Length: 169
Image 1 (cartoon, rainbow, N blue to C red):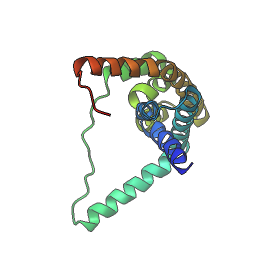
Image 2: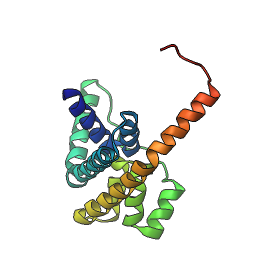
Image 3: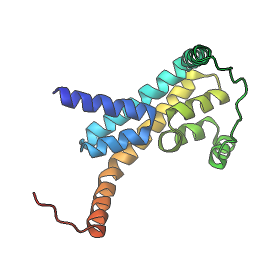
C-alpha cells in the first residue's frame, strides 16, 4: 500500500513539474487507463494551479535564496542575465492563439514552470489561466492515456527486433 501511494505521489509530482515525465512514469509503472488519466491530469492541474496562484511568492523566495547564497559565498550579484529569444513555435502560438495557444502547448512541450509564467505575461486573469491550463491538461492526459500503451508496445517490439537477445529467466 505504501509503495502504491509513493508511485501515485511520484506521478502526480512529475506531472506537475514536467507533464511528459509523469506520463512516461505512469506508463512505466503500468497504471491502468483510469489511474494514468487521473494521476497525470491531477498532477498537471495541481502544478499549474500552484504556479498560477503562488508564482510570485515562489519567485520572491527563489530570488531571496539566490541573493543570500551569493552573499554567503562572497560573490557579486548578477543583475542582468542574457535573454534567449523564445522559440518560433511559442511566438507563433502566442501571436495566433494567445493564452489558449500557450495553454495548449504547455503539457507536451513547455512544461508548467515555463508555460505558466508565459501565460502570466499575457494576462493577469489567474482564473482564466487556471481554466485553460486545466482544460489543456485534461486533453493531453486523454491523448497520452489512449496513445501511450500502443506506443510502448511498439517500442518494445522495436527493441526486441534491434537487440534479439534472449535473457535466461
